Amino acid sequence: MTHQVHAFEPPERFVAGTVGPPGERTFFLQARGGGRLVSVALEKVQVSLLAEKLEELLSEAQRRFGVELPEALAAVGDNDPLDIPVDEEFRVGTLGLAFDVDTATVVIEAIAVGEAEAVVELGDVEDEEDEDEEPEEPDEDLDRLRVRLTPEATREFIERARRVVSAGRPPCPLCGQPLDPAGHLCPRHNGYHR
Image (cartoon, rainbow, N blue to C red; front, side, top):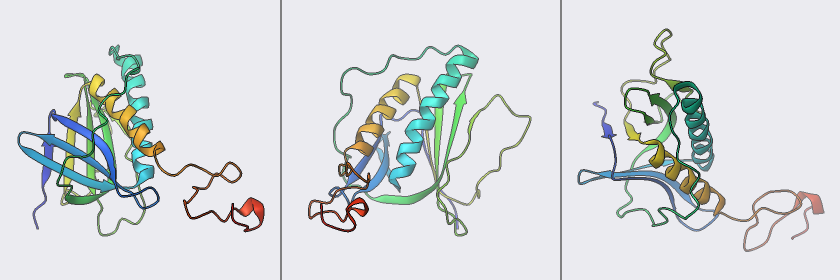
């Protein structure tokens, strides 16, 4: 079976978003460009880790290569919903990040879940200049979404991803677990509804 590489270098729009009510949300990465729209599903923790690792990657690129980074966004950027239709191309198993020094861009690669893959992974942050050691490549027969972003677009993606992750159910002030609208069995109250 052939695999597809959905490449957007650069995309017109690349965002993290959700479908569904809090507590039942499905998280997506969505890229649009050149008349194409690709949506891939992933877990909330993957979106959170992706934003965190992208921030680290930008800081490392600034430190090692002197890349000028945009200031943190003061105004709310892209807050529009996901483009429709939201058709899941595949579920993400592995996320890979790299910084291309030649073009001063961030490369994000979301790779489909393999048959043997049972845990959520986040690929190591790497730069394309380190070619001494070969990183373990996920199965080449898996579908993937590859996006190339400027540091400014990366910063916008990070801010939106953080807003999307934090827009879920509020945490219980005692145990930190999400509060459901119907109530919450808090372990700190010995199972009484809170």
